[in-house]
Image 1 (tube, rainbow, N blue to C red):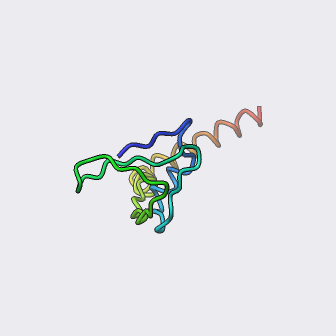
Image 2: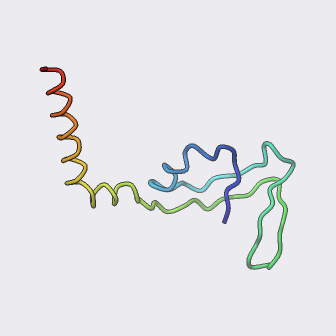
Image 3: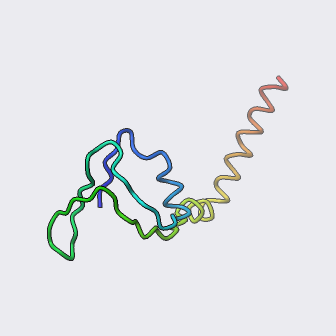
Length: 88
């Protein structure tokens, strides 16, 4: 699968984290959508396509859980450092 967009879909991290519901994809900036359909073994062209949605991946949540102690330590260090600068 490839996503071609410039600068890219801004909501992609949210879509990956929380998943998406089934939805319609329509060609807006092109005359048609072109997909490689593996079952047919060829490229097909549509004006619109029904996307089945995606399952949530929750990579951000899992990453934060794994790094929670380090993140909290770094936030505490930054707050202490800023407080010392203000007090000086």
